[in-house]
Image (cartoon, rainbow, N blue to C red; front, side, top):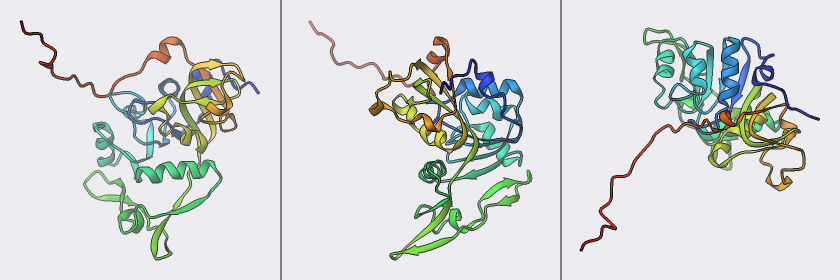
Amino acid sequence: MDKVVPTAADAVADVPDGASLAVGGFGLSGVPNVLIHALYERGVRRLGIVSNNCGALDSGLAVLLAAGRIARVTGSYIGANKEFARQYLAGELEVEMIPQGTLAERLRAGGAGIPAFYTPAGVGTQIADGGLPWRYDGNGGVALASPPKEVREFDGTEYVLERGIRTDFALVRAARGDRHGNLVFGKSARNFNPLAAMAGRVTIAEVEELVEPGEIDPDAVHLPGIFVQRVVALTAEQAADKQIERRTVSAPSARGTVSG
């Protein structure tokens, strides 16, 4: 089945207001910026986002966040996103913070058809006991707090029950992809992308290089096409547009100077 769609706008044309989306990326690495921008252009609102973080440097999900298009975020890292923190503390945004490994496993479990699992991460904290602020009232009070979760003991160790995550759509970015939706991710851009893709009922992948079926060695496939419903081929300019979040420059070294 040829899963290629002509444009990013076509790929997200049926994403409605209030949809839930799992979005790949970590910081600025592996973020499906083209698909996110297409959603922004459509004006979709009240989105529920599941992603490690919510964009940075006015890029990625930060575009939707700044426009007030996101209603809820399930993630594990706020970072230096000041607008994220402002909306959360002002009561404009509902936020469920999850340990990073738990978030990864909840996405994977959802995609694998596992409704829930037990993990030791969070036992003895508000993750398990409840009371984490999901939404503030804008005056410093908590309008909505997390509920307590089931805790059970196995072989003398306590574990908390976590639910698998399934979303209406998933947006991911891959280095290579074929027309059947088989994907290969580039180095650190692999991050949350395969897991987000698994969790989406309809998964849309933007690929930097589109190849024909059979051109990707089966052993090199990071995510099989069964998890992907739509593929968008990026232009050379779009594929090359990769930002760096923090640039560091080493101080000049005196080594190697030649004395006469």
